[in-house]
Amino acid sequence: MADVEFRVVSDRRDGLLLALGQTVIAAGFTLLRQRMVNSDEGVVLTMIVRGPDSGLLMLEERLGTHHLVNSFEASPLDGAATNGAAPAAAKPAAAAKPTAAAQAATAVDMRRVETLLPQLARNYPNIFIQLMALEHDLPPPQREPTLRYIGQRVGAWVYKRDYALGGHLPLLDSVRHIALPAMRQLLQADMHEDVLRVKNSPFCHRGEHGACCHFLRGMLGGLLAGPQGTDSVRIVESHCRNNGAEACSFEFSA
Image (tube, rainbow, N blue to C red; front, top):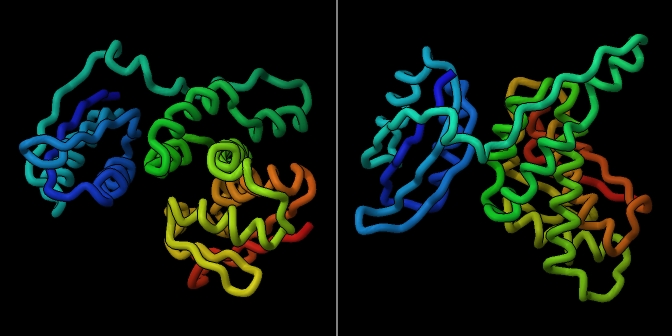
């Protein structure tokens, strides 16, 4: 495996991290951390990535020819340079019964989650690159519970930061005045009657079948748990672009 630092110069800041992060992930690499600053050259994005040596030339070519990139430099890193990255998921202990093994396979890796959450708080609302990198690394059985749990934690944090001083609202008013504005910080979202719709979820069309916006469903739960109570709201992703729908739709019931 190779650890590489890319320094990219661009004229555009909006959408740069998302676009290049998707390029990194599509090449089979993991984005460990990133930093974006303005300079005399333009917008400078530094990314530290990890992936197979065999894919490095392909990734360099894709970044070098990307329409948002004016210039870039690549520098190999030793292992010490990536100590700040989230630790890899621990292997579950062997279990005597298949049911226990199945539970271990779907368990949330709390150590990894607790390492990631402060990074999400620092980068918020630019968090999808790190979430998609995590999704790419997780074993399939762990993706839904892990991303939903992270979403709940992020939603609860946003609620406490931005909405906790407001008065108690009925469920649908909470959706309109808390969940919808919070979603709009991240994505294109609107309300259609009592349904919250997201038009550009980054979790769709990533090789899986069925509804896949587990982080968004978890975040909506975390946002509404404050005003409504943790167990009082049920959220269902009734339609998903991953299944061919025009938008990902979330319905709420108490």
